[in-house]
Image 1: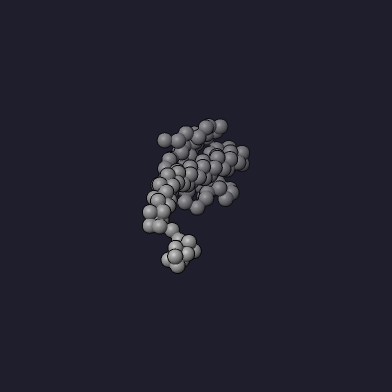
Image 2: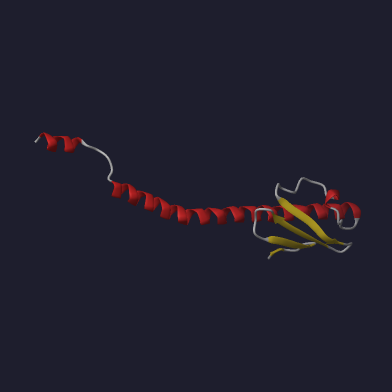
Length: 122
């Protein structure tokens, strides 16, 4: 009888219960980690697009002051390049320009042909 009384007060989890909980956590992690990586990539891609738009605005400001577009990013006024973003002017003339940007941790390269162009990703 003493043995039955002590078993009622014993608390804890069985090995099976612990293994089931670990399996559930593993399944949830297998689903969540790829989704988190996709969200991060989209975030980095959005940063590259924003920098591309800001650089296009800086190109238009340069054109207003000089009557032509520049092929040198150092001549553009403003702090428009974020950390990790590589932005280049692939061509520039009196009539237009082509900007290319990508983020080091993103998964797309974006191109904007201006003036007034739309951003195209590959």
